[in-house]
Length: 261
Image 1 (cartoon, rainbow, N blue to C red):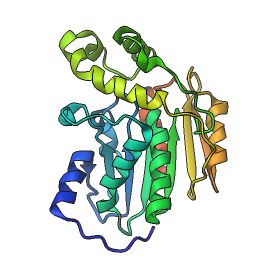
Image 2 (cartoon, helix red, strand yellow):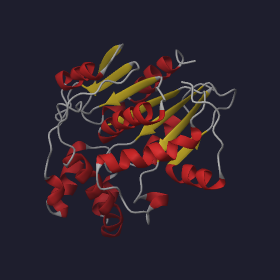
Image 3 (cartoon, rainbow, N blue to C red):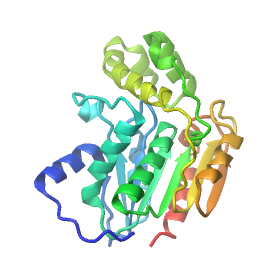
Image 4 (tube, one colour):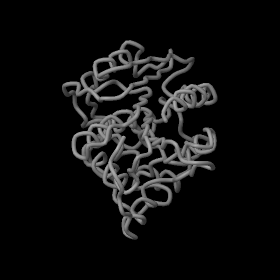
């Protein structure tokens, strides 16, 4: 990835800090890993990722608006809007250091959209794209769950797993997290099927063997989006296999990161 030298202004630094939780490399910077959370997720869910890679990797976890330390920021309403926002916030960080993207569930679609924007609009070719537990763009199915009541929405979050039950049962906490959950489910629910647009980088896909929402066949179809190298890893577990299989997944991603120099 070669984009030349970019000058970072104070306003750009503020925007970057607002959008990303950064875990700097502890040695010479060799690569960056951008992690894009799932619907209803937050940067804190991926805290362990920030300290699990080699000393030459900087980890950036996206902080979506409308939650945690961005609670008062308005949530995005569409996948396109969120992808535009993440891409714009990322621009000040782009230099000659290779960039790798990893997205889980909604974050998988978002990672793909950001990768396309970087390449098409800014001439930046990501070093690799990792997608987890999310159908490729030509196989996604719009859902209207976001139009239903709070209880139906919370029940779906429980079914998928990956969310602290206390956030869903405590009335005060529910009031805080529900707007972001509904906004994210709106993004997912209105993201309709589209022709696969290949990304010009290696593509790695991951899925749980018991995922009721995204099958192994679904994930294998990410090969239609890969312009080159494609790998699919099937791990034990459901939609949030990456909780119980965290160490295995991180170890796999870490090994692939070491090939990015």
